[in-house]
Length: 423
Image 1 (spheres, rainbow, N blue to C red):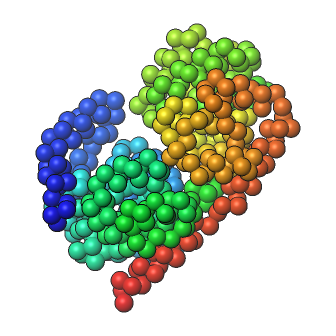
Image 2: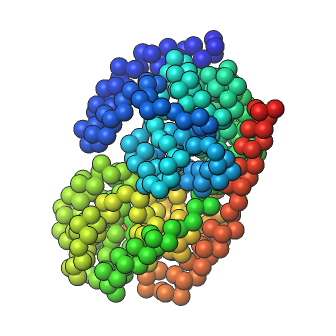
Image 3: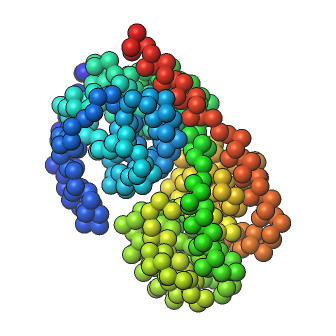
């Protein structure tokens, strides 16, 4: 408790600022002001008996959790799965992914103070918990340990940069990691960094994102979108971050032939209007995917302003330039593009997906470029070389298939945890 005391005091002092930040973010996403009580451990709906809790912060973690959630529903048919989030987009993604599954519940995870954590656990009484990737909440994990609720850190990844940051608070980090009943790391390097910080019971389970199968309806939607686009080169800028769109749009305007179409999909929906303005300011004829009209022959930029359709965008594209990698954001998931069979170009900044990006390069499933302009040149070169593009696409499919199996290994760990608790 003494180790967590300064952290807890900081949370208490920060709460007014946290509320102001919610209001600030609600200017662009009003959903931030919905279900506010849940962030303080207050829930209106009655919790069912038999809950398995999975925490997925936002969109990326929620999508990564999909195969695990489906496996948990199959393994424990008498239980419900509670998905908790921190962002409205994460919550909306879970609604989209599990719209036909009544046993999937969703809520916001409360802020990390002991009173809120205990209120959350009293209300839902989970059999066990799963926290996705890098979310470590010291007070919540301490409350779970006190109530003998085992928690697993699944799909765990820890870059060298993040490890250095955690190492600045060695006592708190070690205490928090030791509160976990199990850790399923994506790679041996992730496992080693976690162990160095004090983690116990670390197993290399692999990356759950390899187990996400491209949904047939989205692949069909992608084919339909491509038919509406017509016989034109289609370059996809996928999950782009602030500052990257300007670089890619400038490179596209300078280098791409008039027939080429840039399918531009920003990572965050609150930036759709901002990105549309960037394209229009460069004199590039723009259409929005949400308009659902036929794509005009003179359209140069199609803005992917929809949620949950990334697989369709990959299926409609010839080449995908993966966002988050053109500026120092650490990259985004390239596995979905590989699974669909879309040739991949990545930038220099992939530290959040280091192992996946390097393995994809070695497998011939991705090409790396030094900056956005070089990436656009590489993408256009692939468009002009169908044989090389097909070779990269085939390597991508093989790469995605070879690394599957993390879901089964994670469920095996969780089954053992549940058995130990019931014993």
